[in-house]
Length: 401
Image 1 (cartoon, rainbow, N blue to C red):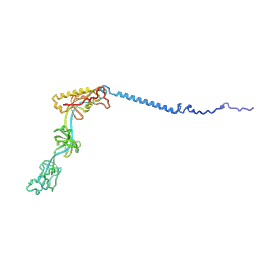
Image 2 (cartoon, helix red, strand yellow; image 1 turned 180 degrees about the vertical axis):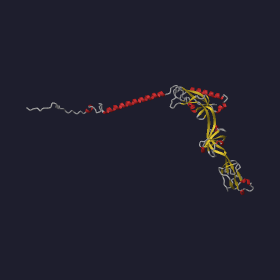
Image 3 (cartoon, helix red, strand yellow; image 1 turned 90 degrees about the vertical axis):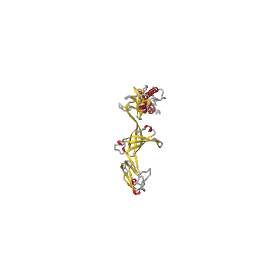
Image 4 (tube, rainbow, N blue to C red; image 1 turned 120 degrees about the vertical axis):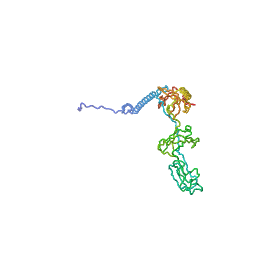
């Protein structure tokens, strides 16, 4: 009998095992490396849907906040209540209407010519020299004078005091007699300079004799010089289909302050045609804003019509109060402007006078210090609840008769 070998107590016998059959679908049932239990493609799709939902929620929140803020800023339907209109006070000041033009500086020109033919023997002056009346300018050789001619005709004197502007001749040459276009010596009187300004036909009716004038010349930059209108030519001149009228302006030599204004310089002229002092003034913007109030739905057509009717009555009262002629000179117009209280616009009837493109003269309807609306705030949307007839335009300025 054969002895069995001793085995250690802790030895574990290997149990027989068999190779597991290969399952072609084993991949579908084994745990996946990503730990999700889902195929990689399905896991990616789930993550995309989550991201889409988050972005969509953010967009919804932004849109909701935008519309909530927008409703909070919208104007109320009570004629613009809550809208901060821009306003300006009625002020007292001066108003001037002007006309602009250009033209050359001119002096009174005097011509000096010999009355007989002869050889010039002497020229006693030069261009730019100031001469006195009666001063000898030039002489002829008496031996070259025509027979029987007085020797006094051989001496040429200055017909007027002034500055020698041109000399058309030379010693040894013959005197030029009877030439109406080329004079021997020309003298300009710079003590009485003038400007011949070309005023556009659209402005000429506003210009009158004695209108005050301010002007500049390029030689002195922005320095202001002064004068007044002395004459208006009745015949216009046409250049490139533009009609202008020559207006003569006398330069005030006492206010040149040492400046040497010379003939031929180009003057840039401002003619003051009308002046009003210590009158009530409102900005043109206030009138323009009121003119568009009905079409923008800020006031009703009925409100505009009532204000305009009252303004016409104010104009009639002005012209019948003994000041009709002065009012007529101001070209009165009946219209209205707007005031606001708590955001509610009200049309105020007024009669306006002259305007310089920036401000209007107020003849009736307002007092100094009153506040009128000049514009809506930027981006404000006008209310429309008061206006049921958007096709009617209100506030056209009515000219006085």
